Image (cartoon, rainbow, N blue to C red):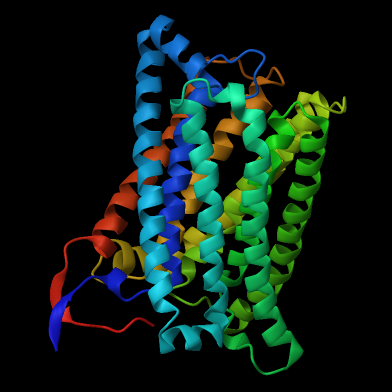
Length: 403
């Protein structure tokens, strides 16, 4: 029977990555404000700092602020739009036989894209609040406990899905297809836990309440190290399978999932370090931060290079991005570019500038910032392309049931 269908109508939980990518882009625009707008005495810029810079700053700074405001507003909207769409689609998907098949396959971990997107949405709304809502900082101490409760609930949801999966495959042998483990798709749970951890760490960096900051340090450490353990185990076993069977073609983009995991965990550690410095009088030198971030970027560049190499050899871009084929896993391509853009901002400002190696707004500073912005622009173009492919106007064709 012929009907109008879109690729997104053939639902997969991986479509939560469409929401995730938009949320990540909203945070990438906040980097303009975080590093280019003065905010003395406050760990992050607020609406008041931004407004003061907009009304008194130079033309370039004013333009950057306006672009950041527009970018944050647009991509937070898209983040929430696709999150709501996914939650509705997932609710219907759970009543299908395809869902039961998914729950009894390696693909069960794709469900972890939901808590990952939920955690990103909370982070994105907090960023939007700081940038766009006047006087938010005056009540932020009252918001931190609610934020931590939200992240705790999302984290428990993620652990619940992970427990279901591991309980099924570890309690009895033969239920996990090792031959289909030839990608980094199984690192999605680690990414979800890392996103919870970085959100949990925000009050550690920003709260002046010792108890709140302490709880945030403990909670973010738990979820952060749970993510690190899961990443190590899943990556080692997956690499072994890839060496034997090659990389699963549609899951090729997951080879670069280590890039956003490193950025998210890196920001978590920076938030923890700032909180330990301000609240608990524990100090570290800026050059230590530079070396730490450089180590993380080294890991990112290695896995980014590996992923791009495999995607090029498998002609992934020609088929699934610029060609006629579609795969919901293509949205995993957005996260590495956004994550590397954000990491470059931190590496430059918290590492090179803070250590005195590069002067702020020097030629070297502007060149590195330009690379970060270029990556961001490329990911915006990719999101526009993928959204048009998967959620654009329906095309006449045979209706395909969700798998």
